[in-house]
Image 1 (cartoon, helix red, strand yellow):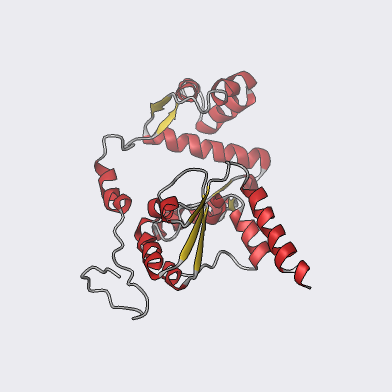
Image 2 (spheres, one colour; image 1 turned 60 degrees about the horizontal axis):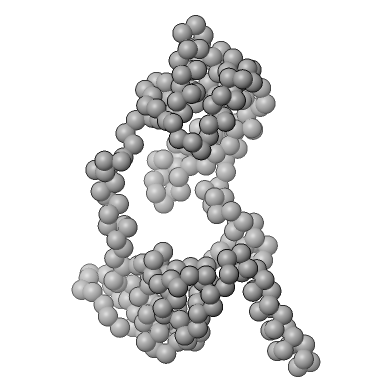
Length: 252
């Protein structure tokens, strides 16, 4: 296998090293700060901002938000524009007032447990994670796990496997005799780990790729199953049927 000259210690002599782990997305992340598209100020939906500024001329923040929510016409005038853009620049004071007033209104009207949210993952920043979690906790709100944004994975994995997606490291691909790539375009989405895939292929590992498109990963496969979008579940059930029928039931 191929390695880069680094000062990282080797972990196992019989496995490829974790270098190279270059990732174009990670390397370019530092330039986000200098992007012309970087958001440097709070942005609020234009219709809501117009209503809010008008209400704040005569009312306190909580009174203003309560009046907006109590009027179905005013409320609908900005909620119906969701997904259509139309954001305008707001000051930091305006943005924090709107959030605070909305939280206070919700607590008074429905109770603190009706406020929920999640902080950035601890790996990104313990300061950001702790700030949001502490705020929700002190408020009496519901702290969602940052893992919850993975849709049905959090509840499905423990119920199926008995644990929360505890997977082996990518270097272990090198030990595989057969790799099934399903739902992952490894060279594109797992760029730093893709070399383990190619090194396993050089070692003689066979590979099948299930993907509706001829992706980067499909090029590595001995077999490419270009399943139609939305039929993955049916294909998985067919696999299970063949395994149980031909290699289990019929051999009993």
